Image 1: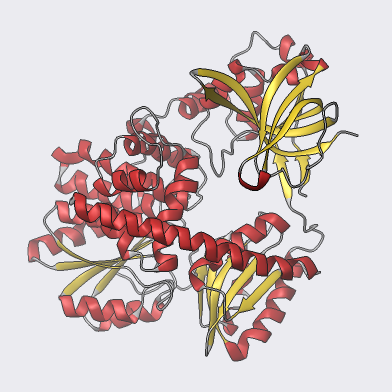
Image 2: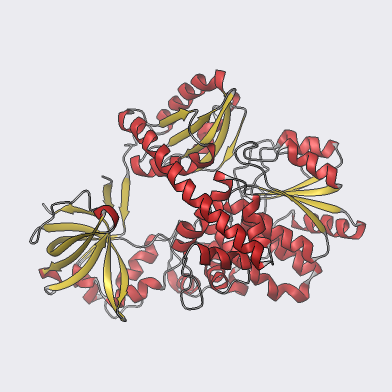
Length: 570
């Protein structure tokens, strides 16, 4: 059970006394918790403006150098290469950059690595492929910052590389022609939290301004995949990312991409003009399917899906991706259970699991799930014949990539950012790495209690749970990292009705009442809590952590409480 951490309290009296303020005091509190202060900041938050809120791409000090090199490639008739990472951010990044380069008439070779055999980052196989294709200028997207040897090899073989990335920047940089990375010291860009897709979009934005100014309005059609990459990579939905997500979700609802249209149809994802997508539908419906291609097969299937203009090919790819996603669920559920057994008996600050039967394609997914459940940094590795490789996921208190750097001398390679990383280690060094890494994590987390935590925005009176508040909360979307969907603690709610629902009775449907709320009743749904409360009875008192939602049934829409967690009231 996670520890509840309540950030603030709001009672009826405080709200009534401020009822003449704008916005609503609950909304005002939520904005302040998210760092939004003052009229101008509120205006930008509630009413994103594409022209006003998207920064000039030429604020990147290296952007002029990059665009001039692309111009040179066009003038010389050079063939260019794009090397994209295999996750949703990498796939969408490669789609964005390929689209921009082809729009100005360049011939583009795209290489996306096989996650299971080539791993993360630029690979020798890609260089061989680019050389065979006659590529003389190439780009990495969503990777490249740690590929010193590979970029040097490419340079020696006549290929200049431009790195387009957003990951942690090492002290010694690769010998690339240029680097576009918002996190690079001295990059000059005012917003550091772009993902790979967002950074690739800025390059294409600069390219269109210079070479296709008449087509600049059409550039917004790339925001569907830019938003997918941004949300899927769990980037903070603040600043420029909020603008990308806001307009990207609008474009996604009207997407011209046949592949996405077929993915929605095959996956039964209700997205159209009448059912606009949300950050949730990207995170939990689209991104898992795109990522399933690299986990279970090859990410080039997802790239083809997003690029195809052939309806038959799109349908076939969407069906294949859906099959991969079903299989991915089965495999990840099995491995999660195995790692849970290790986590339950671990007394360390770190959960460390390695096994030859762990499928490499899903270890990142499993590591993230376990890290959230147990509130501990988690390492899940697949042990191979000579090397072990896998993923790490962290907790907010620990910068995982900095911790890994302290053990870099024991690793074949590694990369990532503060909360997620990947690594490869030779098996003869595995025990030494584990021992040192456990020591590093223990030192960095000294005094920090390893416990899963549920961050609650405010304790509120049930009196405040109204359709009016829900209406105002919806204006705060899109929700995600940096702008989480608000959660409220409501105490001493009386159970009026209760019943088990769903397959295996995993969920609870409740009717709750509170005297503090004017003796009103609220419909509530508690997903996944049926097993924890199998004997809940009428009249029992609950403290509930809820999000506000609406539920439409037989043409009638009512306010519904979505219960995130609950406990018997003491």
